[in-house]
Every structure is written in C-alpha cells, then in structure tokens.
Image (cartoon, rainbow, N blue to C red):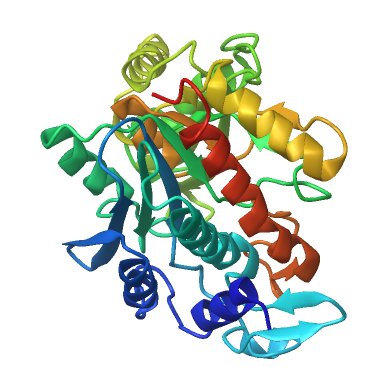
Length: 380
C-alpha cells in the first residue's frame, strides 16, 4: 500500500464529524515534526487547528485543508461502513475520501518529500488544517486568520485541496470564489381572522411584491471569470397551521452569492433599501459567510495551469464557481489563492469515493507546485 493511500485510510478511519478532529491532526503533526516541521496547535472552542511550517525566509506557500467531514447519513445506505476505508475496483470508498482527507494526506506526503530533498529550501512551506470547515466555520480558519493578522504572518500563496476537478483530475483550476451573504428576514403584520381582513394586516401579501422584486433583480452582469450575482430564497414560513387565520409574522431566509462588484455591506444596504421602499415593517439579521476573492493572472495561476495541463493533457478550465471554501479567510491576509483537488462528483454523498489513480497522482501534483513556486528563480 502506498504512503498516500495508507495515510488517507488512517484518516478516514477516524470518525472526525465536524467539529471533532478525532486525532487526525495529532497523527499528521507527529509525521510533520519527524520531517522537521514546527507544529503549533491552535485550539479555539471545540475546534482544532494545526499550523505547521518549515523554513523561515522568503515567501510563504500555505497548503490549506480540513480534517473534519460531514455526517455520513444512514449507515445502511452505504455499500460499506463509511468510516472503514475500502478499496473496490480501483476506487477508495469512505467519508472524506474526496472531501478532503485524500488531499490532506497528499499534502503531507508531498511536504515530507519536498523537505527531504530540499532541507535548506528558500521560502517557507506551511500546512494549515482545521476541523471546522464543514461546520460553522467560526473557530477554524476564520479565527486562525485573525491570529495571523494580529501577529503579522506573511502569507503569499495558498493552495487549497478542495475537490475542484469535475471529470478528471486537473481539468479545473479554481481561481476564486463568490461571496456568500445570508439574510433572515422577519416581516411583521397583524394576526386576524381571514373573514375580516380589514381588522388584520397580512405580512405575506405585503411582502410578496418586495420578494418578487428582490428575486427578479439583475444585480450585475458578472465580473471577469465570475458569474452574475444571484439571490435565492431558501425558506418561507408563516401562519399557525390553520386555514382561517391571517398570520401575524412572515419569516424568509435568503442567500446572495456575489462577485467582486459587491461587498456584504453594500448588498445589505441595497436589500434593506428595497424592502423599505415597499413600506414593510421588517427586520433583517445578516450572516456574512465570506467576501469574494479572486486571484489575478500571475505566478501562482500560471504555474498551476502548467502543472495541471501536464497531468490532464490540456489546460484546465479556470473557474470561480461553486460554493465557498476556507480560502476566503486567507485571501484578505494578502495571499493569492487557488484550489486544486480530486474529482468532486461524490462529495457529501453516500458512498463518497476517490479513484486510486487520482489519489496516487495528487502528491506528485502538489510536490511539483511546491517546487515550482519555492525553488524557481524569482520566488522571493
């Protein structure tokens, strides 16, 4: 069994359902310390974070990942135990195989190989792991980023191991992510009998035109490789359950995925302006998941493009689609960020899996990226 497969299996075997790390980071830290890395454990609340570094001078390359996984769902729906890794027909099955214990294991193997061959390398190679990516993302990389800002950590490049590929390993290079903003809207009315609407005020009726305007609005036409900003209503709730009662309150949950044309503050202000224009009695509580980030053309993108093209046989699609990732907390620190990882077809699903051929190729991809970024002329 190869080193990367063995480590991936060891990590899958640890039931690290978010935010429980279940000993994954301790296992990794032991290996990295043996390879010469300095490891710092940053625990905030119930969340474990590991910061491992090798080297001191020059630019810093961060390998960013998470050791937590989503719950497996009904065990009986799986073909095998989700926390007992199993190889069948050239495929490794288990919760976290693709998202993202396979990438984390590949990071470790690549980092070990790099410092073994280049013990006095220029620059600094770092791994940052959290157990709070799949959960609330409060005490994970978001909190670590605050610590880094306070102590003025230098971060130049960040490679996140999220499963970014679509059909074959290396066919897509993530060069940014949209921002995510969630609004919890409460529209207040006056409860009453449906037969006497003059003695009540129906918040559903009052809010309907405003919601229609929010949904129909074209917020922008996109930004470089970003799609247009979109608003989606995800939940609406009102009423007592009785058909003859006008509700006294309407609750609406909606989310905006937005490109760099906007920031959270401006979107909040614009949404509230639109709601006020309809004369509503309302309140909105906002949750800012993260601002958009975008890595412009430069060394990180060009190196990653060449490395992935050499593996996949053609240049990767360069995309900013998908949801969000922990890189949204690293980008504001000044780092250019990309995402390179395995095929994402089975993530969060029953029978999550990764092809063995892809898993075996990942350490080599990451090692080449590390060497091209830290060893090439002009790395500093």
